[in-house]
Length: 432
Image: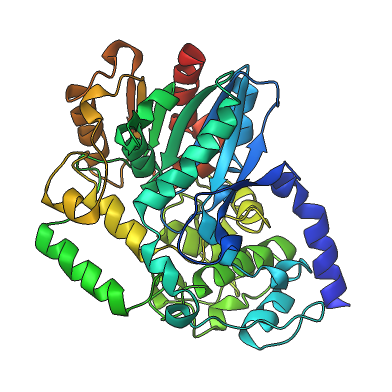
């Protein structure tokens, strides 16, 4: 009976954030590994008749679902705009069978206790053995994949494409504009850039030549993927994140299930017994969403919904599937390349990594950059360097900030309190 009630609750609550927008595969570039992985994915928001498409790239460990709240708000406010939320090729490595029942305990049993779902049993991958080809999935491949999405969005040049992203996704967009695609600069495909709390030219700390060589040596014999929770099991990050959100949706006031799990890092777990919703809220706050605060009393302790981002919206969004918020397998080579491309210029690091960021000085499309309090001025400093060292029109560009926001708040904050949404909409209207 309890499982039936939880499933029914999810069925009622999930559609608000997980409504079935078109989620389609697009052929990617040929790459190391089986051909089945030569594809990427986009979730489309807004009218197909739109003349302008904003392609948004998620950041480190993020998926297309991270834009599920802000994308509908953008298309509602900007006439003639469609948003394509992008999923990189590594999303195809994920096994989401455990979440098909929309019941979080069944998902945990599938992934952690080898209990079958629909006749299928989860086989935990040995990441260094099963996916060795992913050690070569770096920025060059990511941008070749992304260019296929940009060209698909242009529909033969009939539509304008603005490229943007959050965090490392913003760094990807900045690199795309300066990239050399066989003699054609990336910016020539674009009508503008939207950088959300990320970018290049100092937004993130770059790599020295020695540091780059050390990372490459470690990658050669280590895991192809980032270990985001430090447990040696990359996929745990996505499983626990989505399951925790589903518990918060289905049984928000119940005693937290995941708080008792030894797999949850102590830094993400409250010091007192909490509800499922409070467990999610505490973890979300620690990882960059101003989602509220722990109540002063209660056993289990509930969550106080007094943040920029409503806890129910955050829970529904993090619980969505298949276009989910999490990327279980983020390529370590992509991290190296994005940090190595910091200069957007020919230098010993970019030469060693084979990064074709050769056209920064020629970039001539309007730039929007937004910074939260997470980067202490580095994002806008990097954006100004981009402006000063290129042909980007300053009079058509916008630099905005809200130092009170956390890193993920631009994607999750309620519209009335979302400074990113309020400042990017006029920019998009002007260049769209």
